[in-house]
Image 1: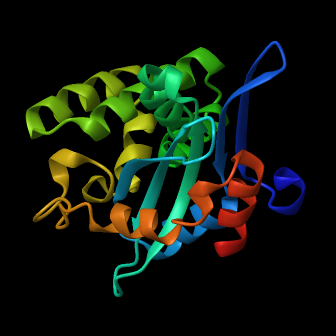
Image 2 (image 1 turned 180 degrees about the vertical axis):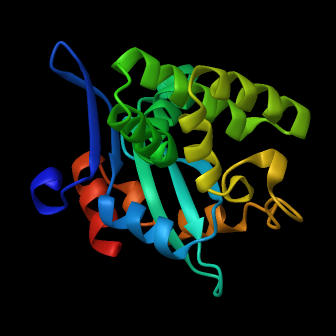
Image 3 (image 1 turned 180 degrees about the horizontal axis):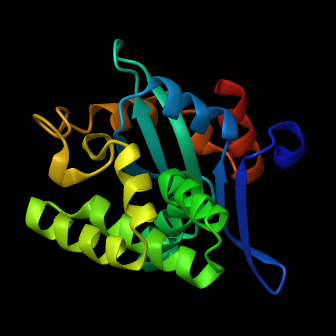
Length: 209
């Protein structure tokens, strides 16, 4: 129903022989709102669910750039007994949905150049690697390797303005917000919801959003 009513959303349900284990939901409306109107910074946190199963509710929230409000980007419910895999499950689902817009768009452009899928993937991985580098020299190394494969690919990268996507080129203070107040605000906002079982919990949060 999420996919039907909010196309572009990401829902992952993990079950073991039909028995519910974990759930991840990322509403497309929230993601688009985050991209269009929030600071490029996510606050990750988790709170305990107070129902009989004592699960965990990890969440990612964004911050409005002008007011102390927040926008939920994604939520995930997981069994407390598999807490060790929470980070992997949540961040993998998160990563696959909303972090790599730039890389995915770039891969599409590389295919337009006539590259096969494996070459486009290699170029995309180099771009992603460069984005996370913290020094200019490390960034240059990735860019040189990318240019050696296809100079047109390098030109396309530069059209995206590296100061907008590369750590090494980001001007001034990278984030400007280092407290967890946003996450705590969200946990307070769902105080009643996390007393519920999984389906009413998810539906209550959806209605609040």
